[in-house]
Length: 120
Image 1 (cartoon, rainbow, N blue to C red):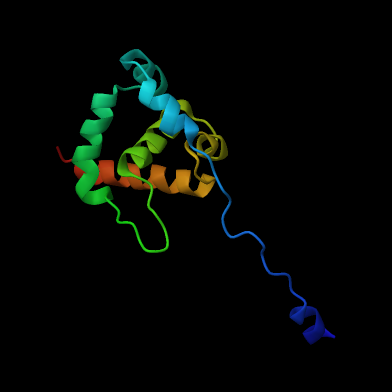
Image 2 (cartoon, rainbow, N blue to C red):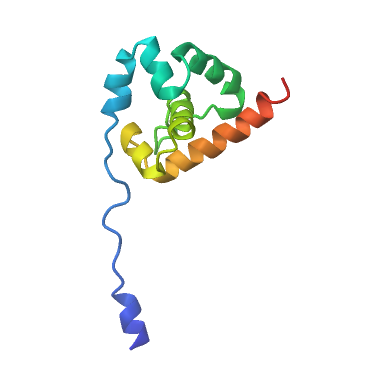
């Protein structure tokens, strides 16, 4: 009886959900400088500066199985989460990523900032 119940185990039907990131891809590029500061607590130029400083530590490569989230988007996700205090799930909906990805972005950004920016 035990073997029978194990053989009927259900396989997951969804490995990854389709997510939309229109807010990041369409709305944010149209932000004025004031909107950048209002939403991210910094200008887009400052975000680009941070990306350039952290690039050696945070840069990722696409694989044949998965396209990576861009560095600018990962830094923006971390800054949004830190600036707003919103839930990981809510931040993920805005950027079109999972709550787990938001968590990884925040952890990776904080570790990179500590490694690269604090010594300066």
